[in-house]
Amino acid sequence: MQRILERELLGELSKKLGTEALFEISRVLSRVLPMYEVERMGQPHPGEEQEDIYRHYHGYMQAKRAAGRSETTMGQYDYQIKEFVEYINKCPSGATPEDINNFLDYIEDRRGLSKHSKALRRTILSSFYTWLQTNGYVRLNPVRQTEPVKYKSTVREALTREELGRCRDACRSDLRMAAMLELFFSTGCRRAEILDMDLRDINWSGRYIRVLGKENKERFVFFSERAGRFLWEYMDGRSEGAVFLAKRRPHKPIGKQAIADELARIGRQAGMVRKLHPHLLRHTFAVTMIEHNVSINDVSVLMGHADLKTTAIYAKSSLARLREEHARAID
Image 1 (tube, rainbow, N blue to C red):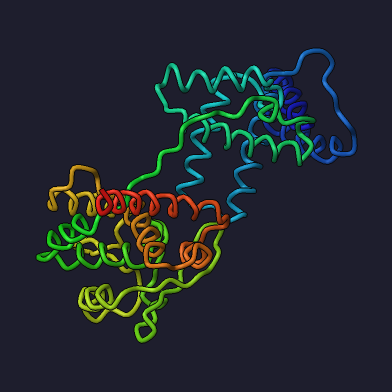
Image 2 (image 1 turned 180 degrees about the horizontal axis):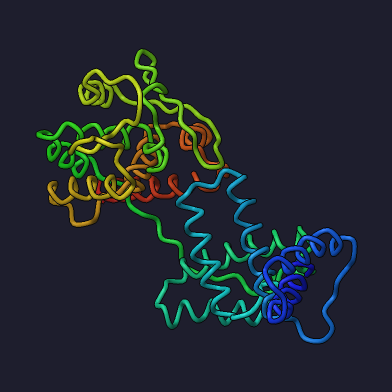
């Protein structure tokens, strides 16, 4: 509030005083105003509300970044919270449960987003308001006064052995493609983890890699002998830096979109109907491990899951496949 008062005073005085006088007054105000509590009489000034929005939004984003959230996650927070603030057209601290419901209905009906996307938006808003409540900006979390979004959770199907074989065949003439496919499949890593890998973190004799997962949590992942052969050949003598580089000079580390495009290309060349993407390979890794009797606890550790419930999703997928095999065998 002191900064707003200072700006308003200087704005009015600038109509009558010169630059030197304004500079001197600004110095005095900066020294004196912090010693007093300042409160506006009547309606809030638009500038004050904008300052609150800035403080709420940036405070939350700084907290999440400090907690080690990935840039991809930070980008989602940034877009979705800004979209919400723009929709309600007021300071977030003044939002009501009705504002939350109206916004969620808007993104579902007008934007055409799924129930699952709607539920994710609600989760992010709840996280935002929990932070505001913890830091004393709001008394209650308005999201908690709304009903959870109900939706039917569908279990994605992992790659079949036949699909994986076709993908491997599609990579025969491209070493980088083959190394990328096998590294994703044999480690179960997230795309961001593959991007952040450094060759110095690879232990070739033990066939494991140190990775930093969500919230900068360190873990070790293992890679197959097959993946190791392709990787070693692809490295071509390199011993440090990013694992995957652009094919064109100056051979900079590839970005997340380039990885997505490369895997999608493998899928197309393999004649797959569905799109091959990083999470599908991560999903296939988890299901394959469970089908080979690796415990859910161990799979959870290898995948860097904070909650065992997340890993349990892959167990459901594996059970669905076993049911199909049983039905095929037992008529």
